[in-house]
Length: 95
Image 1 (cartoon, rainbow, N blue to C red):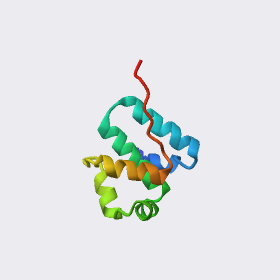
Image 2: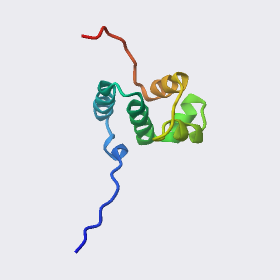
Image 3: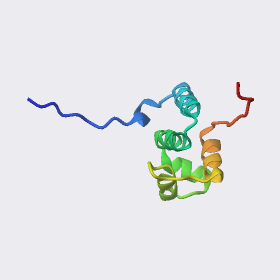
């Protein structure tokens, strides 16, 4: 007997500001730019890509492409999406 597995979408579990904060904090902690961009795309999908597109002035297609697994968003796009999501990027001296 085989068991049918479904694909897990982390966007489904990002229903609160606290969940989004933890998710993005853990992504930033990896230091992996590709993973951070992917995580930001997951959060944008959780909040509604059309809504984020409207707030940033970018097209939904551009956002999906930029934050896809093989995307490479510019810093300008990344900051615009973070602002639309209410996520701040701060700097502190590394330990």
